Length: 215
Image 1: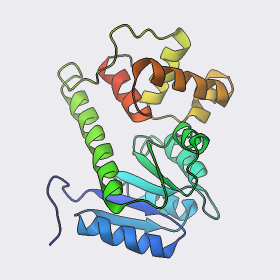
Image 2: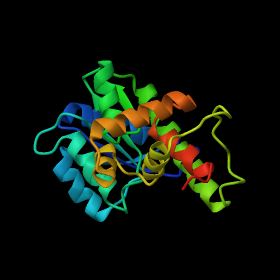
Image 3: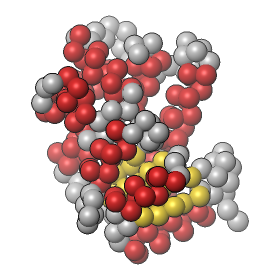
Image 4: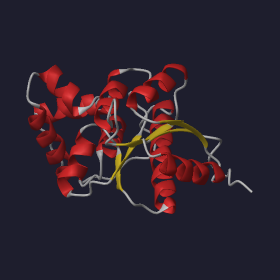
């Protein structure tokens, strides 16, 4: 029996060039109550996104035709898709690989091989964050649940501009182009803000910016 509790048939887009992984993960997620669409690479995924907008994207990083980084760039540039949470799956597990994945616009980075239960937990966590964000906007932000950060956090004027653009769903590359600085500079600002706030990822940073009325 499928577990549909608290999921409301959320739609997921699963992208990977490994048919065995697609089959395994798709079956597992569908058993847990999710509606799963699939694609074999980033270009095929964009065709799917032209017709349907999922609640979350689970994407391999290294793929033929269009890799995960290029796909996320496209997703973050489009208003209809730029707020979709993205979970990267990758065989590369070094710290610099994780940092690059998150800085490129992914919200979660998981290393292969992974436990299916952990994947489900990460999916549920991301969807809950989005729901809190939407609910917070609907209630006028001030009444929504607030992320806890140190009270003495002070952002520089540039950091404030960066976090405002992060809250709009823009990837670091696009923020760099808009502010006319290098992507590495933006990555440094994001990293500094994560350290200052003790937040875990860009999604939480965006939530904090919106709930704190920085936007």
